Amino acid sequence: MKRNYWLDLFTGATWFEFLKAGGNISGFRESRWSTVQKIKPGDYLICYLTGVSRFIGILEVVEKPFKDNSPIWKDEDFPSRLKVKEIVSLTPNTAIPVHTLRDQLSFFQDLKSHHAWTGAFRSSPSKWSTEDGEIVLKSLIDANENPIERPVDERKLKYRPKGFKSKVGTVSMPSNENDEPEKIDKKLYSDHTEIQYLLLKLGSDMGFDVWAARNDRGREFKGKKIANIPKIKTELPNQFDEVTNRTIELIDVLWLQKNNYVAAFEIESTTSIYSGLLRMSDLIAMQPNVNIPLYLAAPDERREKVISEINRATFSKLSPRLSEICRYISFSELRDQIKKVGEFVQVIKPEFLEIISESCDLEE
Image 1 (cartoon, rainbow, N blue to C red):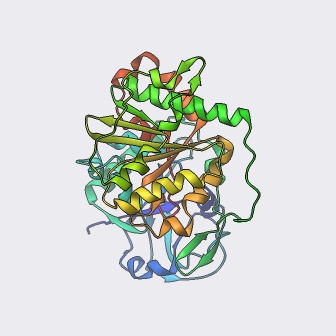
Image 2: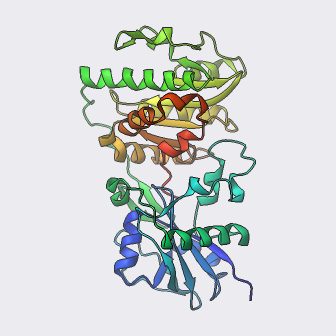
Image 3: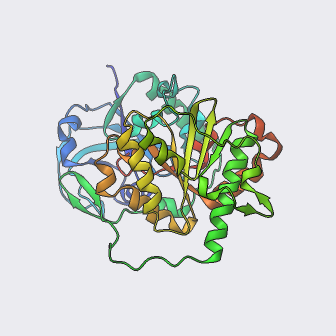
């Protein structure tokens, strides 16, 4: 009998709730019932932790799908259910980062953009090829026998979106528009300049041309002027219309290779986060087919706010959704990784950004 493989997405919170309830029932949203009905006993579920982008286990389906609203998960019912048994299960710290399999899995091949692979993790359950499923299965079995500890940020495992339940899932609740503006202090302003300088210097050291927002050229970090960074450009390629170009020119940091945009970064430490996201959303709205990987860098303590803001209804109505193509980079992770790559920075590839960033898409 042919076995099919299906992706089963979990957050850290829903994975622990699944285990606490006995680890024998996996559930999906009501809207996924028609797909769940296609899953047969004997099929395997590939368990993937969103937020940390790791494969954590394989479950075998042991009975036909059924519907049940009895409580297992705290935030949602996930009534479209399957009875399962464990084939292999790891811990979050020994789970397999998806990027360690990038040379083997089909959806990493011939990418049109650096983020294109995330389409394979857009929703669950979704059917995977037998080849990809067997690669993950073998890797998980090997990792269970020879575990490698890769500590996970506990905050990423505990994260729960602030929202309410609806028929289409959890909807992010916007911040109060009447909240008082956040106070800007010298420390935050200094952090912004530091991160901007580090991203520009990193891109330059990797061999890319770099761009800093025009109004930031006069800033200095430890006595070094942004305007003096090697390979910094004074003009951008004129490949879009005038309105789009004006928006792009205001983005904090750009990496370019010849006339192609490699990555775009907004840095948010002194504002409400919303301003940088608006620039990115304007870019998507004006150029829906643009293939520029987008990143928002912010302090660690702002992680939850970043993810909440990116998943606002305003940005979720874009096509593609902003959360699909914009990833979060924490200040501390960026600083640590730059120190680690050190003298090897010239051989680092743009995919390095995927490793130090995390998805903001709550629907993965």
